[in-house]
Length: 632
Image (cartoon, rainbow, N blue to C red; front, side, top):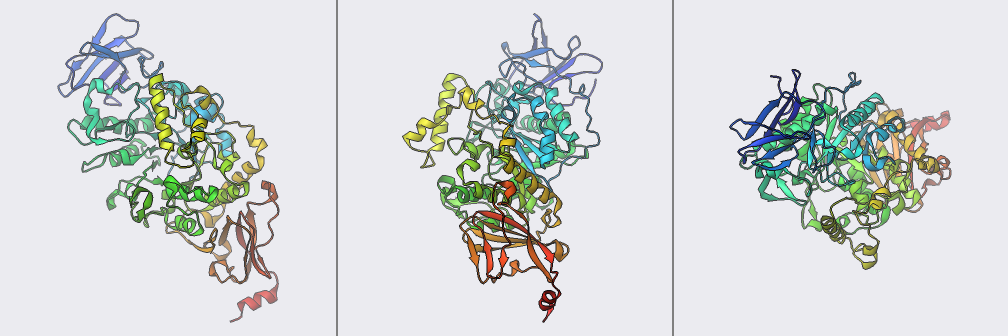
């Protein structure tokens, strides 16, 4: 008999038939119930909680469920596809049928990436893998190198963010069939874009989760989870649970050629085992990639750098961390709002210099909002290990009205901060539509049954009440109903805004080209850059190249016009026999601004308000000036 690809689920056999295997340790009898057939197929107990059997007369496309001790039938916990949703039958899929064309693709590693967070359901009007794939050449042309796809494990309802998935191995039927997802990844690789998948290994959704019917051991009785029942990775009978999620990670890499994973809310993945399940998942991904480079990203609210340290140094071996500190500081700078979890941020020049040099701002200091210490030292983590962003799915929705930062800030300040984000040392991430300042909002939306929908809407309102500016009766009346289909539909991008917002779109394209082509801006470790405060909302960062001519300055001023006379800051001094000239400016006429004159004048440095300027050295043509500079 052929070796199974996965320890559980329904798999086609070369010699014919379908082999079924399921873990149901609390059950005495398990049967396969095939749609359209009266007779069921009894699976044989293996004596270790697993039941298995070969149905020689079945093939691809067959829909089936499991009946356990006469109960059910229930969908397969490892279903590869749920064509009618989580409550319907599972379908036998042939993953080997798809004709991949990415044999030469080398994979995606952590260095030099520009991430793009994408929700398939709202990225295009159609909301499908196929429609999204048609936009991939445009994203590649823009300068995107890697897509971070929001979760696709199937969930109940007709729309949602995907973080309440219940069929961990089944790409949701809402966006297409499994081969449509394969085709999306294959197409991305053909245009030079990697794809990593956002996965949720900390809880399952509240509707359509049938795992408990097979074993209560899937869930922990020890830990409490913020969004549901915690998963059991370290108590009795946890070995098959660990295997389930480890194999799920391998599955996305092997059968769909994803280049890696983004692990959601790892602080809610509880495990006291000698080897943490997060490390085990990471190791499994590397093996499954079979020599291709992989990219493993973690979201971790407490900011534990151990997640991305090498295993040999006591870490968990992941690659990069979402940097909430960067976002929170940028949000305060852009909007002036410093409430709730923004309380501990000033949005000032020093914070942005520190974030560029050290990643996290909080590395063990007291954090007033949580009345505790936040983070741990992360000075050994390279800059590309921190993913910086001005917006993501959570933070846009948490504005209450789904407004993007381009709507919450002045146009010029948004452009200046965008430039800093895309040129500074960390790995930048854009949220879909950010590149053309999309006017469409991004709300929290979730299609649930009426009673559950009411609870979800109430919970959402309670969560937002931590922001005093949102905890008013007037705002409460304005909040969108997550279960209203219009809430979902209104979030869909309008690609015509690439033309109507052409200046902002061109700015993003030019910035990503500079990031890609200017040697001094390339990712390095240790970082060859330093920064200085020029004013409360103005700063300079100097990137040192291999030669003085490769040096670059980035000057950011988020406040009013700044006149420095004198300017006793060594980082502002040009290389010997050179002067600084503007290479790029956020207030260029190309981006809807006005011309930016030279910053250094006979009257000192004059830096316009709400602008970012990239400067490069130019050799001084006046020989007398050059001699004067060279004099002792």
